[in-house]
Length: 232
Image (cartoon, rainbow, N blue to C red):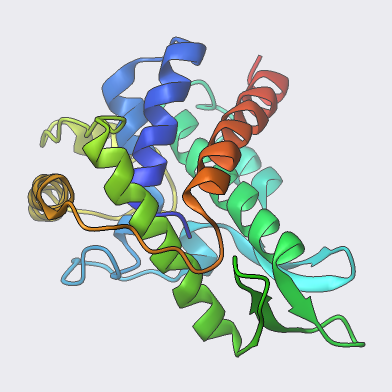
């Protein structure tokens, strides 16, 4: 999955295009990951990716991959689709969908049965590995790109306020407390400081920074089209 840095940079750029209320939209773009316990490990209520991301095994050109069921999300929130938090949550799912499809279709290595058995590196090397290893390589690239996004001031963090809990409650797959919100706020502050201070050379394994830049812009166009098609 893309890092929060990529999700927030995506939200910042889309907010300008969609003219949606900024803060709730930014917050919505990170909400799907909070209850999973990976970004915020000591969260109050743990939920699976399948639940928070509406994940299901889908056919991707003959191969099976876990992807968000976007129609299920829209059906569950059909009465609140234009709320900025809902729109942000949906944007997160679209972002995941774009980057996962791109990575596994363009860089995945398949056997004769169309089972993914490895990943193609940016050097051209075909690296045979299990799914978890490929996922970690993808995450490493996303983290490297996030560091660059922070250093270029392309990321805007949401303002976290206890009052937002009431609005968050309209999302059926999120269950967080005011203490959880404080942890999210602390994490975002630490992440921004760390990434802006590191100044390390970003190392990419699957993508290159140039390819990440190109695909980031393509993802914005894809998400904008999908939102305008379904939320107009």
